[in-house]
Length: 97
Figure 1 (cartoon, one colour):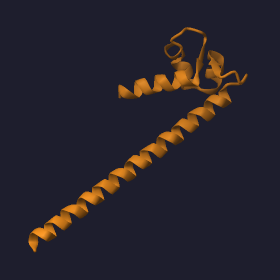
Figure 2 (figure 1 turned 180 degrees about the vertical axis):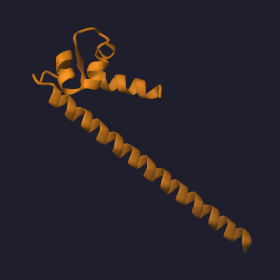
Figure 3 (figure 1 turned 90 degrees about the vertical axis):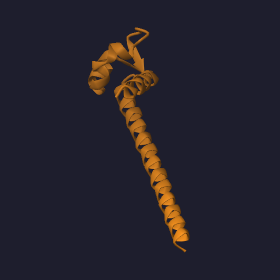
């Protein structure tokens, strides 16, 4: 009887751990989606001429953190950065933390 109780207890703990892990992953995904939405909204607001890219002046006015790193984000040296370039830069630098 003790081994059955032990097995049931271990199974319950395993299920609890899996549920907690799944909930944590779901929360992490929701937080990432929220952060992505905020970035997109801030980019859209800063993109005053709505051309899908930010000049350094637009970045300075609406996204100062992007402006500080503008030259590093603008790897093609076009004088502007896109949302995809900002996301790529952010993803690359998040790996380093």
